Image (cartoon, rainbow, N blue to C red; front, side, top):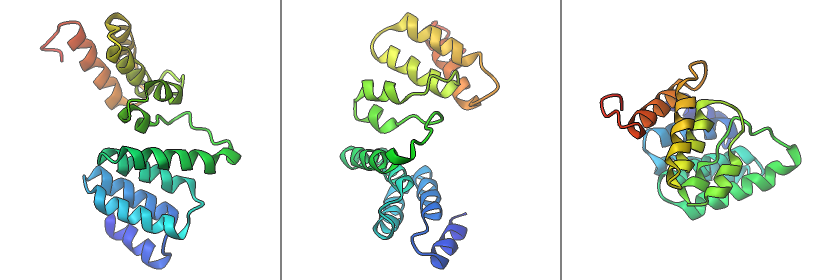
Amino acid sequence: ALAAFDRALDLIPGYPRAALLKGMLLTDLGNQRSALRTLVAARTMRPEVPDLYGGLAYAGRTSGLLEGASAAVATRARLSAPFRLNMAWFAENTYLYSGRWEEFRESLSPRQDPVFIFYRAYLELAADMRPEALALFQQGADIHSTSVPFGELCAVYAAALSGDADGA
């Protein structure tokens, strides 16, 4: 996959979609340095593309560069504002990593999907609201049609909070 992204970037330097996907893959592989280099190079050529800043935020926050990640989130928001993008599938983890819990909570979609239920439950748990967290984790665990890994993660947390060490 990396070779395909490199080929695309050789053909069209700074191509945003190729740079973003390559950056995300490199980040997922634990190579944030290369991801940031790829994304910064593309951003230098195409600074008006909001998606590149999302990739910069992802690579930045997972490497501990929270100030840079937060700046990238703010730039993406500014550039995206005129387009009124639907972000209902998206949770901005940079806020969570930065301890900006209310902003993180506000970024969560109200959709009843295990991803968003997990994060709402996680925030309840972090606030020491164990019964509320448990109810949400159980709710997320009961949904099997979408976001299966997060549903399974909800089940693990629910088991742990219930004292079921074997189930966790």
